[in-house]
Every structure is written in C-alpha cells, then in structure tokens.
Length: 82
Image 1 (cartoon, rainbow, N blue to C red):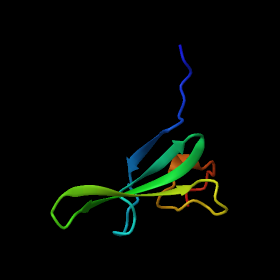
Image 2: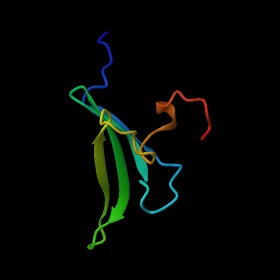
Image 3: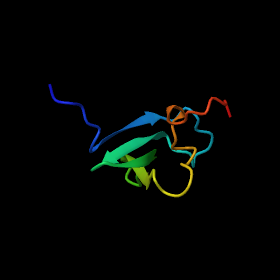
Image 4: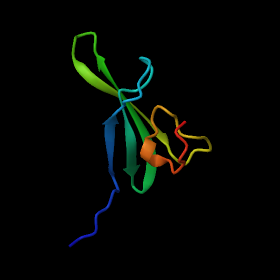
C-alpha cells in the first residue's frame, strides 16, 4: 500500500470564529510541492448575481505569526484558552 502524502492538497473549514465581514468564511491550509500555506476564503456574490469564493493564500514560513482568522485551533500546542 502506498504511503499517504499531503503534497499538492489542502482543506478549508468553516470559520466558527467569524466576528466581522472582513473575517474569512472558511480557513485552512494548503501544501503545494512541499511548501505549506495558510488559506482564507470568503463567500461572495458577483454583480451578475453569481456566487463564488474569493481566496487568499500566505506562506506559513513567513517571519510573522499566522493571521488569527486563518489559523486553526489544532495548529497550536499552547494549552492556554486565549
């Protein structure tokens, strides 16, 4: 049996912490050729009335903490609830 690989795949999850319209509706992570990224997605409606998702991607290894709207609770080992 072949070993499972997350390469070139990702997942988005409904953002249960959305407080404002600027916060994404969905958030998650993506792996592209071995590089990890944070993903955020917003549900939108075009001027013609078509529904679509607007997506933003940022590298996880940037020299800054991940955006709290895109980070998942499981991504942190910190036991503090805040």
